[in-house]
Image (cartoon, rainbow, N blue to C red):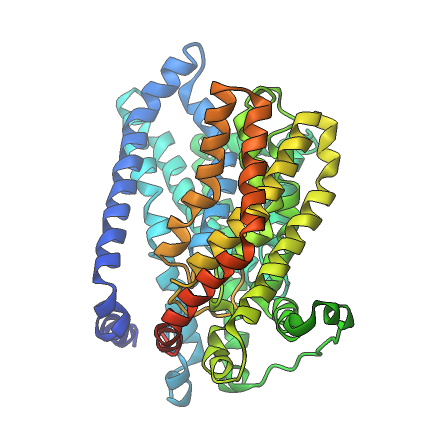
Length: 492
């Protein structure tokens, strides 16, 4: 039966339209995979020499084990955002006389041979070989190597458990933050020395191979829990059952003061609060607002005034960038219906513009406490807010006319690149790099005040020319109207 499953998977992959349309992407992914394999091989063969040079008076094997805790939490974070459970098209199989346990074991077994599980081996095995060649006993290193391989599989199944809990929350990455944050916090605040526990535990396995049973038991427990979760969900009616959700109606009467664009603003606000991707994106506003706290408290950044512009643009324009870059793709599921109505496209775009401007003003006001780190920071944030309103809002609206990818609003926002195309990457140059580069150049050539004045002047010019710019942008959308309708009508 497993052989039959493998055959079906092979045919499904190579006969799919995705494979035919994305050969170039698949080739690029292969090159990336080979690049990481070479990097991990280099790390595996060179780590012993690096540790000896960095810690000449200490045992490199002990030092390596001391850092394994950070590798574990780093690997867990990478997997959460990049690795997904390899789910088969099981619906047709559920009507056939195939045991559910067979299907579940196959899915879990397939996850065990993921590239994410093989990649660490290109560092673990060479490093083990180098240790043995350096004089360490093979009877000690081999159990240690097998223990690391088992830990890789434990991380694999732990990731799927975290993802299962993530599906139940609005902020899909919250369970990951809780797990990783708790483990790191226990070690950082010396409540529970996780770094020493992991390192000493692996050294104990190396000295006493019978202790290898401990990670094996943990692996079986995680596998069993994953098996239980998947088997409970593997029913035909569970996939067909309609999702019932309570719709909360908010008072949006305040939008009426905006006149003829009020219906479009209400539509956008409802879209943001009633869909998973847009809602989690809105929740991430906290990240944008507090972004400066990663830099400003550190003295090294106090003298890097050019960084103030980057942080100011990003912090006050967080919603503008994340919401604006997918205009009008947010409405892709009903874009054809929307364009068949007797509406003015300029009203449609102006509602988006007003929302983005409001977000910039609100984020600037909420970010005023950054003055605690210096008055220069507040002044740059003000200049960045003016620049976002006058320049970036128009740039991102114009860039939206090139969007041709449909967006699934039911997917999470964090590290979700669905609907992302070349436009989203290229538009980052005028949005972030240009104002930061101009600010840095003028600050270096003339001075801080002149650099701030330049951002404000650009922003004010954009505000003054707003009506003319909107006419140009609207015409661009009208010229691309039918191309976007056709693109948004495609399922893939």
